[in-house]
Image (cartoon, rainbow, N blue to C red):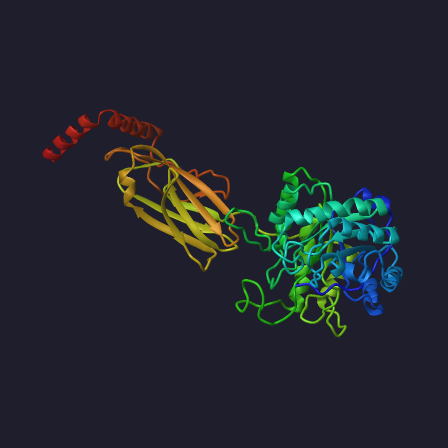
Amino acid sequence: MRIAAKRSVLAVLTAAFLSAGVLASSTPAGAAEAGVVVTEANATQIADVRALGTHWVRLFATWPDLEPQRGVFAANWMASYERTFASLPAGTHVIIDMVDTPQWETGSTDPHAPPANPEDFAAFIGTVARAWAGKVAAYEIWNEEDASRWWTGAPDPTGYTALLKAAYPAVKAADPGAQVVLGGLTGNDYPFLEGVYAAGGEGSFDAVGVHTDTACNVASPYSFLRGLDGRMIPDSFLAYREVHAVMLAHGDPRPIWMTEMSWRTTSATCSEGAWAGRKPQGVGAEEQATFLSQAYHCLAGDPYVQVALWFPLQDEGAVTSGLIRANGAHKPSFAAMRDFALHGDQLSESCGVFTGPQISVSSPEDGASYSGPLTIHVSAQSSQGVGRITLKIDGKLIRNYTDQAFPGTLSGLLHWQGAKHIALGRHTLTFIAIDKLRNVSETNVAIDHVASGGVGRHIHGHGQGSPGSGQGSNGRSHGSNGHLRAAHRHARHVRRHPHKHARRARRHARHK
């Protein structure tokens, strides 16, 4: 959910350092630059920006307000922005998020309808960029263009790319030092970004904008969920890494700017999205502060995220994700943001768990030989909870052990009768475990099926495989090496002369 576009702000920026991709502030090298989205640039909010000590401010500006008639710019609105820019703390870098389309351009009363002619938008933003040259650090082209709420109709990466390709040269011609940001994608929407690249959008932006303030998000930034394809789903905070992966796949070294991030503070039940009525809408005030620190901690490890802005500075109406309550009271997150702006990332803990469960195979040992049924005993452990263990023989499914409660440890015990019916010789047992985040680990154990009466290696103790290694446990043999070699020779002889051994077995049975 986004606050309706407000009247905005700005600050002075040296064009040279932005063009070189260098961000000037007291924030430690490698950490994302912090800032806030200001929705009402009054004296009180400007004072709060000053108190925070952050260096970035994002403001909304609407095309219908600034150019109510073709070629006629509203002097009052242009002057209002100029006054805002002048009121900001020295060294503030301003991002203007340009949204909406006037009725004279589309013929529609819907302000979120995309421009009928991208060149009209380009002419408009070029004029604005020329007027505000040296005062605005960056222009964000639209807001959540991948969502029908802000870009009327179905997501249209091709249509949006046409707008981006028209706007980019217009801004650069008017103010070469200003950056052009691909409009913030709803919840790290990397499939939409793929569509922009497919439509030829590469080179028409200086940074990719993403938004991680998804509806009813109550999970820590360390938490995420993978889709069936193994990639983090876009609504996960950490899925900005999937956005980066898409960029790298296209050979694009440009940075990511997180132009909106936040968690709501409310005890209400979620009223939107797939979880409406089934989960909380927000978190407690202290938890919001914790998540803020954790989010910037994650970003500190990924320097390609250059800018990260909290949305919004202050609560307004149903939007309760601000650092300040609607009545002006500061939440704990305000102090957490100020601490980050002054001292940078102070956390040392791991940002998320990306390894699968630890798998332990008690039976069989790696390299064990057997005849008859086979006892299989496996367990998997994870701090994220284990949902399933899959057993396979030579790549074919034996069975699954599942628990939708995702216990910390999941175990499976099987006296596998089917082991009697597989071919004699060496086989591979595979154990696959998956946790609640859909992290996967795998370990393999080699077994030798020998004929009845063959000398085997029996299972005592525990074998252990490392998650993701694909290597099995190395159990110890309790028979001599000579006995083991004899068992393998016997097994080979049985395979080569089955009828001879069958006759011997019948004679042995008669003499018993």
